[in-house]
Image (cartoon, rainbow, N blue to C red):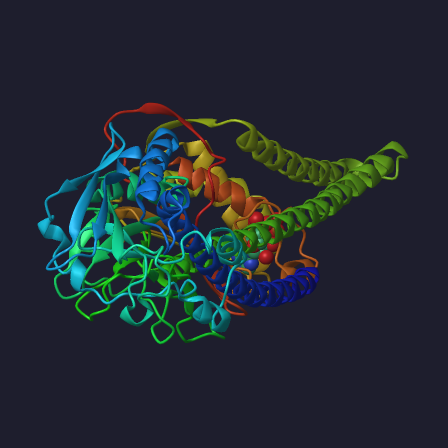
Length: 624
Ligand code: ADP
């Protein structure tokens, strides 16, 4: 009854724990989804900021040159040219990449083609030079007026970061009028009036011309871009992103790449794309960039625009901008990386939950076991007290009668004597059993294994139990197969084991008063070919729910306790331990109300006698 109550409490505890775990798992899942989404947005924002900063930092190298040269549309006089030479030398002295500038040219608009002046850096003089073939088409470019840096309108419409706003206020004026020609590559500035209609407005003005600052591709590709990639896309373990700067979409040219091969083909799963220079004019977009990231609220592709400080000089569609392309290094595109992180987060948190569940299950099982053991031990103490009290009362009253001279005659005295000796035998058997249990629990028992003849073993056991069998008026059916080979075992221990089984058959088989003892060879027994000795009764039988427990120490089935059948709950434990120590097994089949059969399976005798130490406290197993 107590076990049933406890089982119910246990079931409630398991249900409550399961519900709590399910709720926790649900919350964890939702929370993890949110965190993952927020992480995605944060990473996309960070990437966006990194791209803006990369852009500004890259163009800062150009802006510095423009700031130093301080060219405006009225520049171009002899004096101006001398000043440019001086300023250029100053710039080289302090520039981070002094080799960035290959040459400085002044192209004076003359017909049929411009007169080229090249700066001789050591002499600080502009000297007439050859028309560089790479400047092809430059003289045919339509003039541009000094409109404000293009792209500002786009900025006003699109998202505009604080950094770009700041940069705009600093650099806006100085870089006004500059353009970039990626084919040379060069920074170009128009000087003087180009517009023919304005000719004669001011005789001070020089004829139209160009200042061209030719840049070195190699410095940009091998120094500036790698430095920038490390500055803005660096993670804890190398670059977080694959970075490439490519030119042209029809004929693709990789100017810089952080990973060989990246950028060579169209990057379909890029996380961010940015036009580095952009086109001039209000109608054309500025240097636009896009960071791709999908969230549940934002399924589109957010686009932003950065300022085109140096719009492309040539406006034909054939002139293609440079493009910065980035893609997250781990897990492909950012979305996949975030999803991967999400999956890992979920796995870890569900792993932790699982651990929690397992520990709770362990805790419940252990505490349940401990509680059960404590109850069993208390039952044991009560049972032993009962077992002790009955013989002690009988002995004490018999002794009192003898002492008080109530007993008359020799016959009565003999009768009293046999009662006392029977009770004492029962007492010693009980004490023996408890000591044996304590002994097998503490240390391995020493058994002397030798061939034992089965009929001899059964007869010795029946002789020891004869008193009890007679007292209970039981009928014993003894059926031993002829010519049984001997078994391997310890005679005393095996007899003790069978005695426990017979005692139980006597205790639990009361009304039918029948015990069947059979010994035979089994061809396919538990140990293969072995000898089986079975003790059967037609008593109360065992409830299937009790079967898994009857071999546990101190366990007594509720029906046995209810029928007030005395016992300690140790008999079967000891019998099983002895059977296993003999390399055998003890099994049971039972039907409530119809009786039980306990079968001892023993191996055949081996030729040699030997002594073995057997850990009889090894775990008890059973076969039903
Ligand atoms: P005890 O008999 O002292 O209670 P045991 O370890 O010998 O302890 O048996 C454990 C339990 O197994 C018993 O309490 C009883 O419920 C059940 N049992 C053992 N043998 C039999 C049997 N022959 N018939 C019915 N029940 C049995």
